[in-house]
Length: 362
Image: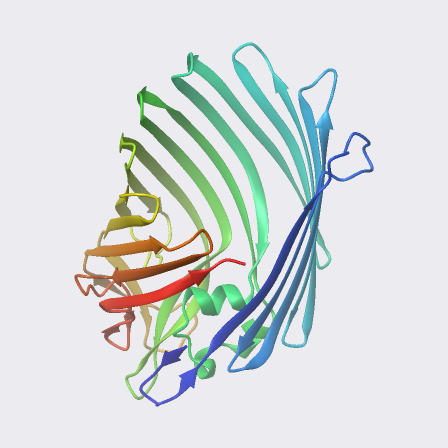
């Protein structure tokens, strides 16, 4: 839920059902290896705004001349308000090994409403040092249909009155093409690393801009931009002790269009300490570089002024206690430095927080 200056309380709720069925005998092509079913219901202000149903059927098996094959079909039915969307993806992959190289060749057919796209896929992994260093190359594409659930839960501070009704009734999809090269391996026992460079092209990349109305109140609205992006990624994971694991991640982004709230540099340090089978402690330190805020003052489409948001350090702490294998308790402290990592109406969306609760598995 959220609260605004107009004293309006908006509630976003999601009810989900997921099940996965695995079959032991999948030797025949027509027998699936697994079937995945999911159903989501999204409620906006206690009103059904969106229904989503996904059926994913996966076939796979060995082959004499190649290592294995995978054939999967995903059928997605989505009703947003009163409009229906049908999305079908069919994915066929084959895997083949040589002495030092692993190949994956694939072809993805994507049907959304009445438009068909075909994405070839390629992944090549080569061993450079035995069990110590691998290089890889990936190329492919994908298409995703945005949903109200994606938009509102990504930024729950969207005002109904400022959210274009045309967009709610005509949701965008995003088609992305990508290419990636990288290295991963082990430095020594307990320490692994990965570095990669990725180039992407998106035709409707979603980010959140601000709109100023005549009362000088700023509202967040989603914007969709065609953008080319390069991402340089590095991470190193160290099991310093059987009870202590740390992960350091660095992402550097560069893009050819102005994007709102998207940092060019993001650094994260994440640590988990397991005192015993019941007690565990997790910490995270996340740095975001200076970002751009796009603000529309003239109410004209794509007419934005740019403002710089300061760099921030987001510090979080979590203490977990497992009373039994089914029942657990937790205390979480978030944004301990009370950083303004997202702005809404000149105030941080989520300031310093202390949460506690229980988890029960059944």
